[in-house]
Length: 218
Image (cartoon, rainbow, N blue to C red; front, top):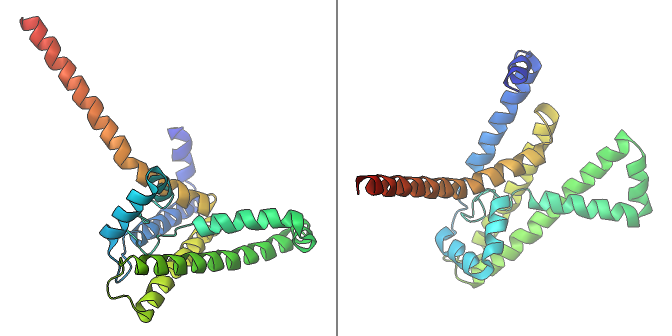
C-alpha cells in the first residue's frame, strides 16, 4: 500500500490535487473554530447536551464539534446532505426533475444548481429557527434584530461556504468533497473517544503489570 502511495505521489497532478485537498480541509477546520459573534457557546452547549443527550453527540460528530461550539460552520454539510436527499426523492415524483436526471451531464448540472439553492434555503430556515430559539432562551446576550441578522447570516454563509469548498475538492482535489469533509468531521469528533479508550487501556495494562510484580515479589 505504501509503495502504491509513493508511486502515486510521484505524479505531479496527483500531488497538486492532494495538496489542494489538504489546504481546503485545513480551511474547513479553521472555520469550525471561529465563533459566531454574540453567542454564549458554553450555555448553548450545556443546554443542547441536556436536551438531546446522545442525539446531540451524534449530531455534533457530523459537524466535527463545530455545532457544540456554535462556530461559523455549525450547520456544516447537513443542509447539503438533506437537500440532496430531497432532490433525489423529488426526481421520482416530479417528471421535470426526472427528465433532468436523464439528460446526461447538462441535466446533472441543473440538478446540482437546484440542490445548491435548496441547501441555502434549508440553511437559512435552520439559522432563523436557531436564532429565534436561542434568543428566547436567553442564550444570545442583548438579543436584538440586528444581532439576529448577524447570527442568521453567519450560519447560512458558513454552510454555503462549506458546500462550495466541498465542491472545489470534488473538482480540483481527490474524491467526493462533501464525503471527505464529513469523514474528517467524524474523525475529529471521535478523536477524544479514541484517546480516552487508549488511555484507559494503558492504565489497565499498567495496573496488571503492577499486580504481577507485586505477586512475584510476594
